[in-house]
Image (cartoon, rainbow, N blue to C red; front, top):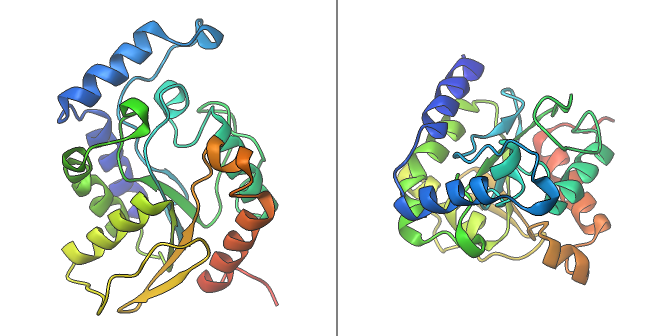
Length: 230
């Protein structure tokens, strides 16, 4: 049932044209392309979630990269952020391979599903508050379909806020708003949220987020989700 519902949502997401600014940008990027990908057939549409329908861990990202998921059509696929993230997921035993270059490359996730705060590539990687609000039903639908979810990992401050807003729409309110901090663990009326810096190229190249730091967050998430052995 979860897989069927997620497939239905994926079709709804990829057909969305609710945000004129994002539609214009994603399609222009797909037409003009980056020189390195001049021969690629860009996706140029909203990007649905990706992963294991029976996932205990949900990773909440920001938005597709213009020449990453907007090109490949799969979350965190085809860019430096994805290179960093999937290598860590592989080390954690949550991904079948350490690289993610294209849909159909054989990558599968185990116990993990990836969603995003916004589903279209935004200019300067900055969706507006209104654009984030228009994407809310997609996030709500995917999270509702992931019935085995035990922990959410927010990749960055925007994802942290977006996930808390999702809980509020579901009637789950913290007594005080949890503040984003890398490695911070929040229990919001029984819902577990774990914070992590976003694996953006800026964060990983400056050392703000190191492989060891991401490994630690994923191992913590595995323990919380009951995916560790022994």
